[in-house]
Image 1 (tube, rainbow, N blue to C red):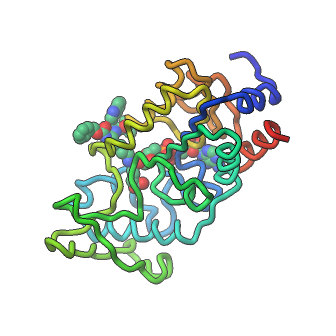
Image 2: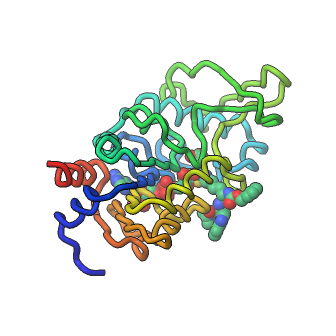
Length: 258
Ligand code: BJW
């Protein structure tokens, strides 16, 4: 890959007509939300996130899995959007045909000012009935996620659906489950039509979401990657900016529209 000068990257962004910003857990890391493939810490250290985020784990031990999601929900509630989320809102204000697509289940893009974020993997804040997706579920937040953690991890019984009394489950997409069709279609269409796609803070290993930057590249868009670590997306990215989202994105935005 040729070396790309910073002013050239800024110019590419400034001149773009249609931009997609595709984010993963790394965008929220500097807000204090652990990435998905980070080792779990504290009382959750002996669990593996990839094994907890499955329907099988929930059915085998609903209290364990619901407790983990409650702990994460409380943690996200305490987090604030960082300068990476905010830089994305500046890009949206400068390039009206911008689409933000996230794999994250937090609400930090929305709280930064991107209300129309496309969520490919659902939300921590949209629990639903295990039996009928049409039954939404509302329930109170736990008082304090971390303080309430008992020794074996924070086990909490999930509530029951008010309509049919089945268990309520997190409104996220687990391994082996289909992504929400409308979100996936909208994401693929935006990736096909964009001229620049910024991929930020994702390992790029979870499909079909990881197809989104690949669709953009094969449709002729320039893919710019922001990540402190190499990923499988390095090969399709025209430009790899090695650094953290909260540092690189504001610098890029400032260089594009100074
Ligand atoms: C920073 C940073 C900083 C750190 N700044 N960066 C094709 C090939 C092989 C397998 C498959 C395939 N197609 C499907 C599959 C199977 C499977 C899959 O992809 N498996 C792979 C792991 C091998 N996919 C599925 O099962 C999907 N469903 C499916 O295919 O269904 C088929 C079907 C069709 C029709 C009917 C029925 C079924 C579903 C995938 C769902 C993924 N769900 C999760 C959990 C969500 C809930 C929860 O959060 O608990 O989504 S898994 C997890 O991974 C989560 C994330 O959104 C997703 C992606 O992770 P992400 O965001 O990339 O995070 P990390 O942690 O991996 O990486 C963080 C990155 O940030 C790193 O690169 C760091 O360097 C970087 N970073 N600090 C910038 N400050």
